[in-house]
Image 1 (cartoon, one colour):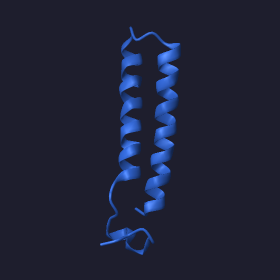
Image 2 (tube, rainbow, N blue to C red):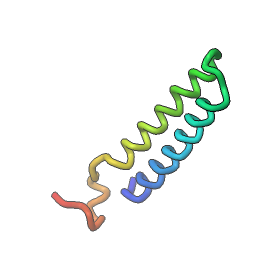
Image 3 (cartoon, rainbow, N blue to C red):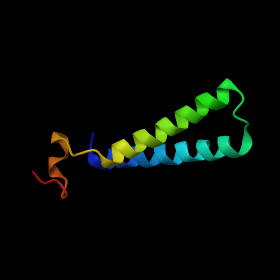
Image 4 (cartoon, rainbow, N blue to C red):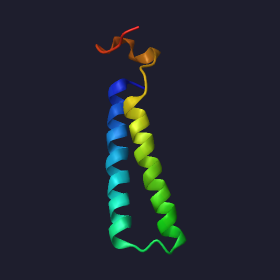
Length: 69
């Protein structure tokens, strides 16, 4: 997967995870199982988005100008 694609997917996951996290915290009480599952899922999406945006370059990304061996 190209660097730009990983970065775009990471940004989308951050946006979706943050939106769900804010929505859950503001709108729903954390008394139901569904709220806890959505909370865990949104935190997971945020963490995976950060991971995709900050992980190192792979062999596919050698043509990217920021790649340095």
